[in-house]
Every structure is written in C-alpha cells, then in structure tokens.
Image 1 (cartoon, rainbow, N blue to C red):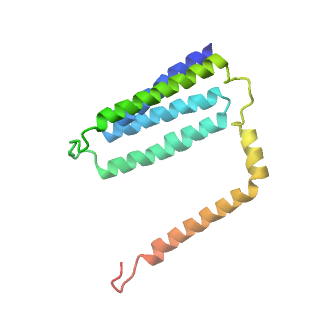
Image 2 (image 1 turned 45 degrees about the vertical axis):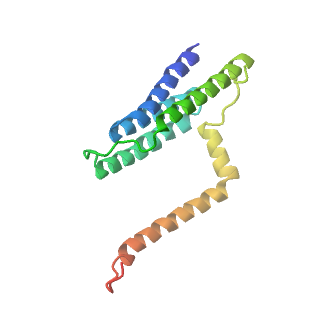
Image 3 (image 1 turned 60 degrees about the vertical axis):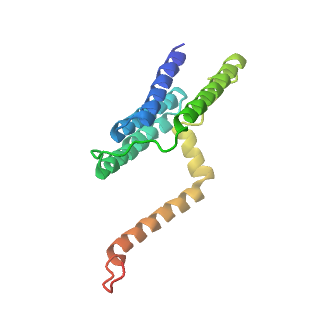
Length: 173
C-alpha cells in the first residue's frame, strides 16, 4: 500500500514537472521543472531497489547536467523579449489530440497491467551496485577500458588543439 501511494505521489510530481518544463515561458522555470522530474525518477529507482542508479540520477543528471543547463541558459540571456507568435496555425490542436491519444494509451496499458498482474514487485532487480559492478568489471571490462582510453585521447586532443591549434598567425582561422 505504501509503495502504491509513493508511486502515485511521485508520478503526479514527475508529470507536473514535465508539464511545467514544456509550458513554462521562462527557460529557468523550464529547467527547474526538468529537475523536479529527474528527482521523481530517482525516487522510482529507489522504490525498485536500484539505489546506485538513483544516486547516479541525482548526482549526474539532476546535479551536474542541470547545473550546465542553467549556466547555458544564463549565458544566453533570458531577459530578452522574443517573438512568440505562432506560425503553424494547427499546432496547438494537433498537439492536444496527440497528447490525448498518448494519455489514452498509457491508461489502457496501465489498466491491462493492473488487471492481469504482469508487474510483480517481487522479481529481482539488477540496479544494485553489486550487479552493476559484476557486469561492468566482468563481462564488459574490455569495452569499459577502451571507452576510458578513447575519452583520455579525446581530452588530450582537445587540450592540444586549445594550446597549439588556435594560434594560426598566417591569417587562417
């Protein structure tokens, strides 16, 4: 019963954040709506015993990526007035029709899962730190190391281009 109440509360919170992200006129409020949705997703991960994924969701996405988004929004400037006239006349009605179809599909899928009982909370979840660690450093150790090597090479190349590639004194830029 507690899981159901928790799910309903944070599902409404996630949907509210997503709707505020889309409908907010101010980009900062839109980014804050996205952050609310990301925190709600982290609660879903915790309720499904995916604690590591929840922590990564909060630290990486809700923390670092959203900070980057807010810096970019502030750098671009949100105090400028923009033309908000709509050039496509049927865009809003078509969007509302598609939203209604999507909501109907979600309701039908949820009703079928509720009545047939296909979703079982007793099944094991592979979102724990142990399961991710065993898979990452067991089966996927070579692709993990190759990815790390590629990222190091890309970082070194970026630093080299920043120091040596930008000062072309012969007029090319």
